[in-house]
Amino acid sequence: MEMREKSQDVLARSDKNPRRKRLKVSKNSKETLFDSGSRPATQHCQGINRLPIEVLLDICSYLDPRDLYNLREVCKLFSHVVGSPAVWRTFEVTGNEVNTLRVIQELRRMPLLKKFTLNARADSDDILRQLSVTNKNLEELYILNCTGSTAKLYLRSLHLIRILEKCNRLHTINILGTRFRGVKFYRLLADMGLRLRAASTPATPLQFRTFANHAVHIPEAGRQILNDMYFGCKNWAPLHYYVIDRNSATPSAFISYLNRDFISVDM
Image (tube, rainbow, N blue to C red; front, top):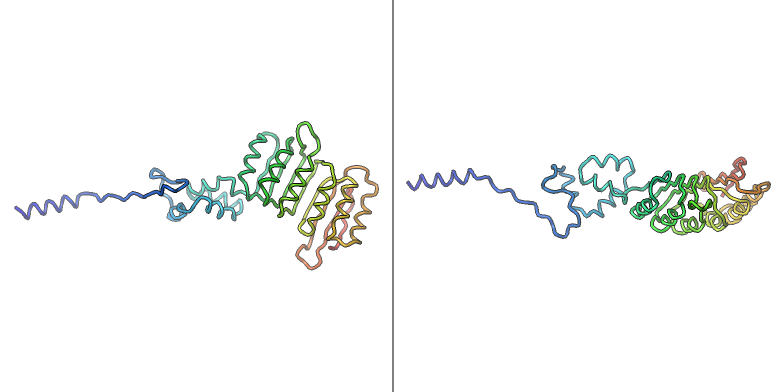
């Protein structure tokens, strides 16, 4: 009788399913990207999910746009991280469909932005001001066919000046179909020296002469050649500047003004 009761007790215990331990979630976690109802993640995602979201954003910031696009399909975690503007390094705004406030909000969330394109906008002043405040890692700036505001044709040079002063990694500047007054921008542009790789911008004779006289990385003979290029120009004309063989012992630049042929100047 006693043996029968023991055997029944053993069978009863063996029929019970062992309880599955629940995964504990730290109360200090800022964000939970997976829950018990989501589909199983890969082993790699489960491990990465324990990293702070700030670390994941920093890791993704080293990837190019194509890798980021492919990374979205790995799991929900990466889809969430890649969707954050903080990891994107290029931003293009074309036309006036997107509200100005929305563009400014996006710029605030892109501290790692390296390339910015503004095309056919009528409210460029507010956007460029924000760019100078929050996007100091900028390397390339393209402004095409824009106006300062709906009431002002010219851009405010103050915001462009602040971009040159604050964005110490900036090396490429294209401003086409857009005008702005003053000479300080061109003086700062010349002061960039060998860091400036390419520039295209409209310039009056005075603005071009300011650039030529302050480009001290160009020998005096080369600057004299540049000063001879503006004769015959009475208004705005395109200025183009491109550095070649930048890493060589004797880099040179191709420069054109007033739609004339490019000249090569040693630096």
